[in-house]
Amino acid sequence: MEDFIKFRKMITPVIIQILFWVGVAGSILGGLVTMFMSFNAYNGGAMVFLGGLAMVIIGPIVVRIYCELLILLFQMNNTLTEIKTSLAKK
Image (tube, rainbow, N blue to C red; front, side, top):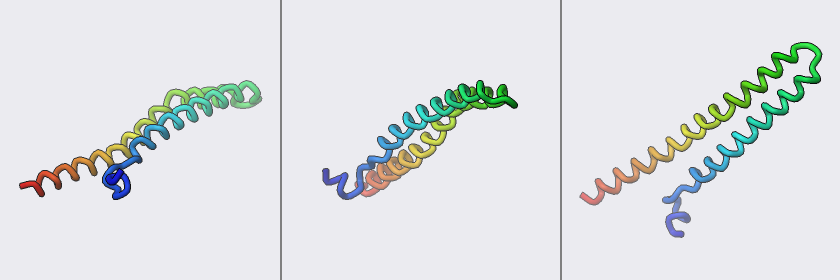
């Protein structure tokens, strides 16, 4: 608990993983809604459908890349903390 209070332990990586799943669900639902709405479109319905399909396929990949970049920052912080600790012991 002391590490949590003194900001030595990060909780943000766990939050990022939760946000990843929320983002994946949002992109899939948004893509499916767009695809179903394309059936009501009079002009350009096929393009709207393909846009929704692209959102379903590419959306989770983009969310994953974004979350990996955020987690990478925290892994860099952990590595630098380990280096600092090992240098302090010498």
